[in-house]
Each structure stands twice: as structure tokens, then as C-alpha cells.
Length: 186
View 1: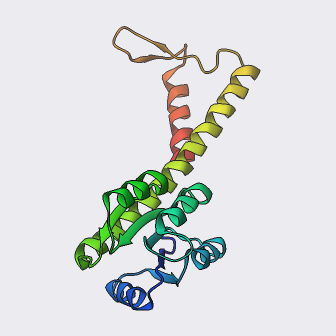
View 2 (view 1 turned 45 degrees about the vertical axis):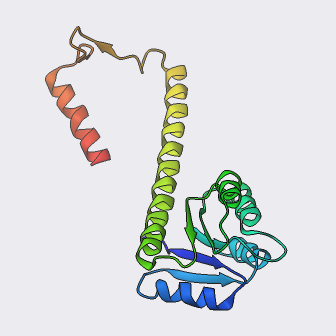
């Protein structure tokens, strides 16, 4: 399992401390930043999977920060935390920042812990999907190259029920092919 890195961005030190206490029993490595700019520096130097950001911060709002994160690091799962929620701020954060979850201060500890755990699972599943898609794309290219070298090799013939028809292969040859595939692919 890869390291579960969580970044908390809030301009209030007491909020950062309170959030760290929420996750004290969880297996996360917690980074914290007092501003969006400091948060970006942490992201540049660490493999962050999940961010919890306050909305109302000086210089750059949480929505602007998370929008930048979305653009530059789209795989990071983003959570917004605010004490000054307006419908406009929530919509902006969701639309521009691609927010996964939106929480009001004071938050419910259990809900926040569950959301962060789900965010890490979302990150890991999406990463695995990207890895598998990359393999499938590579295999498709490999298959096209093989087909180019050996025309018709990838053609599959089926009977009326959809079963695959094999060319004239003896049962002994088929057993050998199956054994080789099992050996190679487990």
C-alpha cells in the first residue's frame, strides 16, 4: 500500500491543529500549510493524494487554490471546508475546483473521517484504473503490430451460439496452448 498523504490548508493554526486531532488514529501522513502558496510548495515536493482546504483565506481563496490544484494535479482529491458558506461559494468550489466533498465548520468528525477515507480509496481506484487502461492501450498497439506482421492472426470466428471456433487444432495442441497460457498468466 502506498503512503496516504493528506494536506490540510487553512490560515488558522487552531483549525489545522483540530483537523490533525481528527485524524490522529488514522494511518495518514499529514502535511499542513497556512496558505495556498505554501500548500502548492508542499504538493510540488510530495505525493499528496487528498487535500482539505479552507475557503476563506487571504490572498487566494480555497476555491481558487483548489481550481489551480485541479488544473496542475488533477488526480488529487479535493475537499473544501468553510465556516462562511454561501451557495455561490459552494457552486464556485464545486464547478471550478472539482470538489469531492464540501464541509461546513464546525464539521462532524465521523463524517469528515469517512469522507477522507473514501477520498483515499477514490484516489487509489482511479490510479489503478489509469494503470490498467495504460496496459490495455499498450496491448492494443502490440496486437495491431502483430496483426500487421501476421495478417488474420487476431481474427476470431464464432459459431451461432457465440462460441469461439478454433482452426484445425488437435486436442493435444490445444492442451499445450492452454498449459502455456496458464503458466505465463497464472
